[in-house]
Image 1 (tube, rainbow, N blue to C red):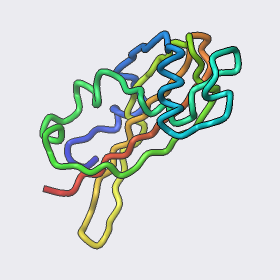
Image 2 (cartoon, one colour):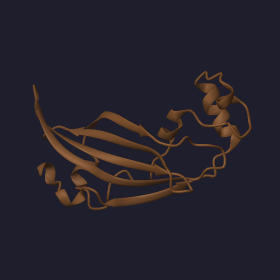
Image 3 (cartoon, rainbow, N blue to C red):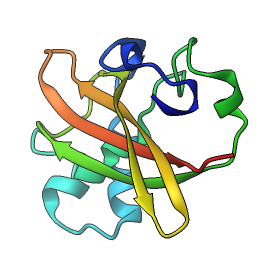
Length: 144
């Protein structure tokens, strides 16, 4: 693996963080800021839910595992995008649990040479254990 990265980093949960319970006003404020007008996003009650993008607010306490190569932590990297797979909507009263792991490490060659990508996965579930969202955050590292 490039840059001192090891395949044994992949798939191991290195952080678990819990948020909540999520408040009614927090949900309504977020939805209002997005310009949502539907009742299910604006009116308190049993139908109230957070907008699907609400899930991107949640991250674990750690961005990388403790054994991630130290020379990469301070190194210049670029956000190479996010993929989000949605599950159940987040509702007021929910507690959101985030399990963080390195999902993938791969290389690509472009015009400027070889680039290394590290995909950190945030798997979100609620207090019932239901899947809320999976967010794959890609970081790209260039050779030194």
